[in-house]
Image (cartoon, rainbow, N blue to C red):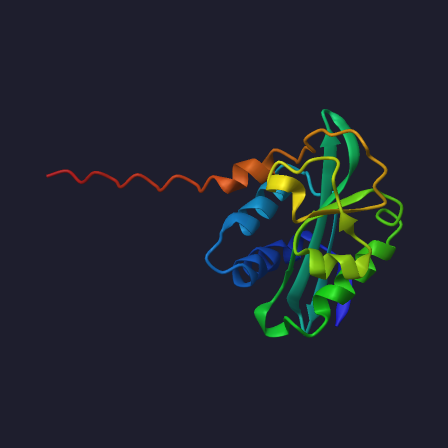
Length: 173
């Protein structure tokens, strides 16, 4: 098992992984693809096992208005065959040790019981627009006290809207 920065060649494997890890939801794959197309992912790594991408993690900018106030961890995914084996934990620990990440304020919208193991704490400020009462919004190295709605890259909202189905071609008589 090897952890490395995501390469352009591995992007299709990441999109497939996101579809497998989040069955029934095309959101995560659309999100990452849109972020890539628009050059918005800041930091991302994959875990590779026998030439297969088995885990993925990404960080994008978090905003207070137009000012960057930290990084969002999203999404993180592990292939179903490798879930529960510590792959995601290893990838997250790796990412948290990286120079570009280790001193930043981090935010994550996720399962508190899982992320608390890595040093994330409940976050009362800023406010997450996707989580009523910030029940699943956590942060690390957060010194923010102002109550504002934290911003995400526009791709997070755009990915929530499924692409319009292609219009059926009309057949002539």
